[in-house]
Image 1 (tube, one colour):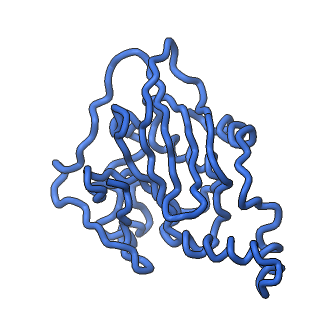
Image 2 (cartoon, helix red, strand yellow):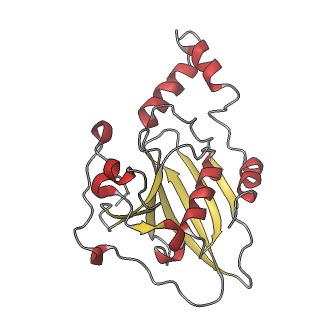
Length: 227
């Protein structure tokens, strides 16, 4: 089943409560074998046209560094909070991985605060075989949800020294545009030169291209992020 559940009750989102016991925080034990590359298809949910990236990453990349890769791959600016979602076969969120709550953040997130520290977990703690999936949420206000699916596993003679983007479609949305509903409205405005908000939105967007996916630029951005 497609990953569709949201983790917060902000703005009418579906509320999904995490499990009451730590025993439900299921992870995949990392294999102690030769280096492996994971091929991941990451899809930004609830937007049209479809925005996705195909990345090849070291299987043991730390989750905080995976966060940096996702920011680079979609053109985000790391200006907001984030967390990873672990969910069951029905697409229901069961646990969260992210930064430990500090400075009152736990009070804001309530029971949804990350229970696993992303600096102490690696991708192969959660993914092992094709079709395994986790989620990634960026900006709890706009609520950008990404589905991360493992599509292939490639044995390597040496560990990958960098993450590669192999393919993708469409540019990522601009920051602070109001999440999927705001992005949809923005696209409608920009497609109608006679819309009363067209000129203002064009100025606000600046040189942000809503359409074009630039593979070379994406790989340059990824090269700047530590693996």
